[in-house]
Image (tube, rainbow, N blue to C red):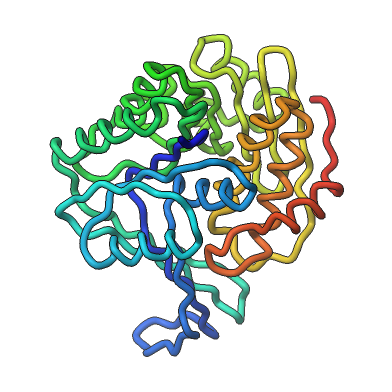
Length: 312
C-alpha cells in the first residue's frame, strides 16, 4: 500500500519546445517537442518515486491524451490509479524563446467533470488512502468541480488519518484551509491574497503565515518566495532558505519538486531544517532541466550541501 497518495484533479500532457523568437502572424518553426506527464500532483508523485517513496498518483483521464499521459507515467515506473472521465485530458504548452531567454506557458482549461465523475474520484481516493500516511492534493480544479474540491479531499484525508498537504490557489485553496490541512505551500502572491495584505517584508510574511497556523488552518506553511528563496513556518519556528544560483532551463514543475522533496524529507526525518534544504535543492535541480523533466536524485543530493538556511 502507498505511503503517499497524490491527487491531481486536472492533469495535463506537458509539451515543451523552443523557437528563436515569438512573432505574431508568422509560422514559427519549433524544435522537436518534449512530452511529459504533468499536473501538480503527478509531478509530485514522479519526484517522490525517484526519491524512493512508496507513492501512488491518482487522477482523472479521458480520451487519447489521457491514455498517452498514463503511458508516460507507466514508462517512468510511477504507480498510478486513474478514473475514467468522458472529457479529453488537456494539454499544456511551454515555449522557450531562445533570443530573449523568456519562457511562455499556455495552459488549456481541460475537461468538464460531471458530479458523478468527481464522486468516483473521491471514492477511489478513499480506497487508496485507507492506509496512507500522506495525501498531497496539488493543482487547479477542473471545470464542473465545486470550489471546495480540495476541501472535500481534505475531509477524506482526515477521515483516514492521513496528513493533508495542499498546493493550489484562489477559492480552491481558501476552502481547503477553511477545512484545515497539515501543510500548505502558497506562493507569496497566494498568501497575500489570503491575507488581504501586500506582505512586502519578511516580518509581514512570517506573521501572515503564522496567522494561518494560529487559526487552525495549517500546521506548517511552506512559503515560496521565488528568487528570494522560501520560508518554512510552524507555530514555534521560522526558517528561511536563500535561493540557489543555478542555470535556468525551465521553471515548470519546480514548485512541485520542492513540495515532493519537502514531504519526503519530513516523512524520513521530521527535521524542518533538513527538509527545507532538501526541498530547495529539488526545486533548483528542476529548473536546470528542460521541459517538465523535473529533478534527479543525484542533483538533489549535490545541491543540498549548498543550501543556506537561517532562522527568521
